Image 1 (cartoon, rainbow, N blue to C red):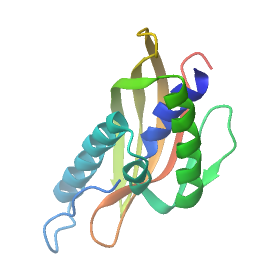
Image 2: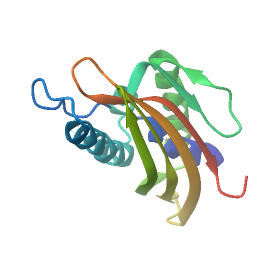
Image 3: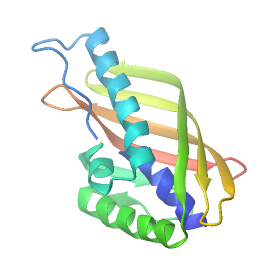
Length: 160
């Protein structure tokens, strides 16, 4: 079950947001694009689509998660997410809720820093609900097209 939870949490690192209007790279357009990334993160995490999850990362994205080695780059992220999803599927786990709450966001020169907390609710193969809470720290990068992607993601479970 722990690996099933890890798949849900690996989803914290997932796709690009819509590009802002042509030529706009001000605070408002950056905030809107980051908000769109956050919404996509939630939607894609709930869907469990591996390719969409991977697309949320920059090409050199890094995932630092609890009790696991660092995962660096899209290919490594894809493989890790496939393994975690296979374990979740085998256990009959399904993500019912993923609710990140960003407590602080700082945007400077094409890089954003955020920290927050999250809640994941999953359903086991036998219908039990499992809740999981934790903390996250993420660095986002504006892409050449104006979209934003996760560059570095770190999370840990509450109580660790």
